[in-house]
Length: 113
Image 1 (cartoon, rainbow, N blue to C red):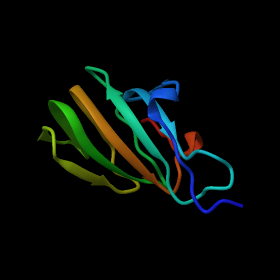
Image 2: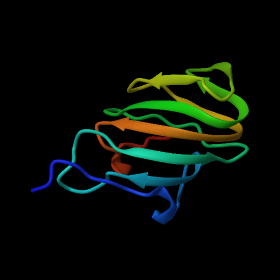
Image 3: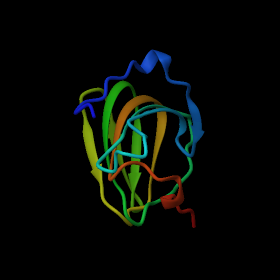
Image 4: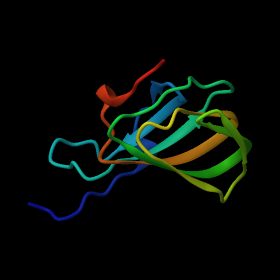
């Protein structure tokens, strides 16, 4: 069994998500540690939270803001935020981010009020 996995995001199809559109890597059954997503934020993403998952966002392109438990903060390239379980959040604006969910992303752990 290989001790690595190599991906090319250009070959990954984007899927709709509460934030906009996401290309998701390292989603295989054998991996439970983390996944990595390149996400294009739509202008007005949906407020949501996770009960088990922590997310780390790193802004690649664009500008906007992130709402975290009712507070709003500006975002620009080079900024990062760690979103812990239970934090209601959404990004707003014209943004492209890297999202690293820990543990690996689970669509069953997406909750809306």
